[in-house]
Each structure stands twice: as C-alpha cells, then as structure tokens.
Image 1 (cartoon, rainbow, N blue to C red):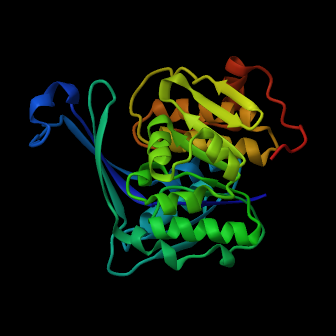
Image 2: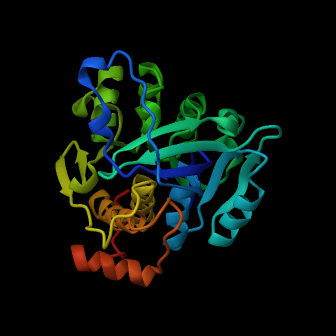
Image 3: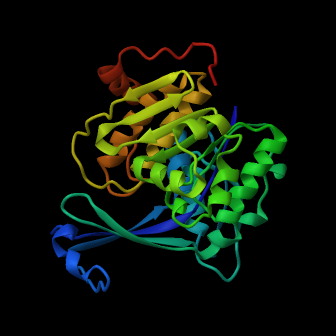
Length: 317
C-alpha cells in the first residue's frame, strides 16, 4: 500500500521555560496581555507535521511518500529524510522562501505557547494527488488551509481513503473549509480541544461528524484516545513513557503508528494502540525526529501493554 503524507515541513525552535505559564496570567488584565518568558534553553530541530508522521511510518517499516512544499533551506533536511526511508520525490522546493518555522516554549507542566511562520507552506496548493499513482491511504495533516481543502476534494474524486487531521489549523480554517475537509473522510482525528472548535465552527458534534465521515478519533494526551464509530466508542489508553522530555511531535507520532496499523489491515482500535506506543517513544525525546527503534523493539513494547499483536488479520480498513 502506498501511503501519502501531506502537511507542513518546518524547522522547530524549541525552548524551555522553568516556571509555569499559568502563574503569569492575570485574569483581571486579560484584555491587555504583555508577557515575556525568559527561557533556559533553545534547540533547533527538523520538524513539521508531515515529516514527523512520515518518519514514524519509516521506523515501522513503511516507505511513505511525502507530498509537501519546502523552502530553499530544505536541502540537508531532504537528504536526512531520504536516508531515514522517506520518499521525498514529491516535495517541491520554493525559490525565495524558507521552510515554515515553529517557535515553541514549553513550561514545567508541559504547557506550550507557540507561534508558526508559514513560509513555503503557503504554496502547498501547487501540489496535487493527481500526480501520485496507486495511493492506498493518505493523511491531510495541518498545512495551508486552501491546500487541505483541495487535497480532500481530490481524494474524494480519486477514491483515495484519507485521514483528515486539521490540528492547529482548526483555529484558522472557516466552518465551511472544515466541513469540506471532514466530509468523505475515512477518519477524522482531533484532540479534545480541537473537537470543540470543530463543533463550534461546523455545527457538527460527534454524531454529525459520523454522518459525514466513517470514524472519529479523539486524542486526550495522557488519558489516551477514543475511537468513535456509529457502532460505539472504544477508549485506548496511553502508554506510560519511561521519561518525559518534550511533547513536541507526540501527536504526529501517534498518527504514524495509527497509519501503520491501518496499512497492516488492523482494525482502528488496534491501530490506535500502535499510535499510543509510537507517541510514548516521541515523548521520551526532544523534538519529533530524535527517537528511533526497530520493529521488534516496538512490537515488544506494544505487547507489554496490549498483548499479542496479530498482524495477519484481514483488513478492516
């Protein structure tokens, strides 16, 4: 199965604040906020939703095709991804622009405050699924909003099963754009906060979303995730990390593990369990691309938490 991953390609600037953000917000002055946080460390890392997802898939033995736009500073990053097992032949470099940039500060409670610079991501609409042959599964991860809607329309037209993952773009996209994205999706995946934004903007609650998409997955951080279908809801626990280093890219790793399960023909609940294991590995390292493991190591960790992993089941996807 050819897996196509779309989304942002970015460099992450990760900073750590030794205190708690919440201690510095004054409720009586929320109409005028002026805050500056002195951070202890800063680290520049390769990132972006699409490479983070694709990297996890590559670790799990897939060779995902990355379809995204990048800036003139992508050269070394492309080489690194190629070596890691990601197909970058459909990444277009945009002259005169830099890769998108993610500036994120994390406090002592793992709360995050972030800003995102669009950069070359704004040109993602230049790419098309019509240029990809034999795509069996795709994910439309956070990207230029117009491109996300375009990709969803193309997947529906071409009969490509896709995961719609609006993520941080829930705040930016209109209700109409979000509705266009979720309609016809095989899976809609959001966290609990994004689910509420989606409901407010589209008027679609859980039942409404299941009227236009097959499955809804809601991630809940340390409380795991829920796989919701017309047949009911199944909760999937998070896998406890050996240590907590940085939450950046954890959700993307979950999506990579989920997609590996779907590629194996596993049902959504079992696939979500793979996502929980992949997320734990990412949480134990700085950034979304610092961890590594073999399939055997991953499988053993899965079976410690969820029992025997049956990979010969007929496809439920």
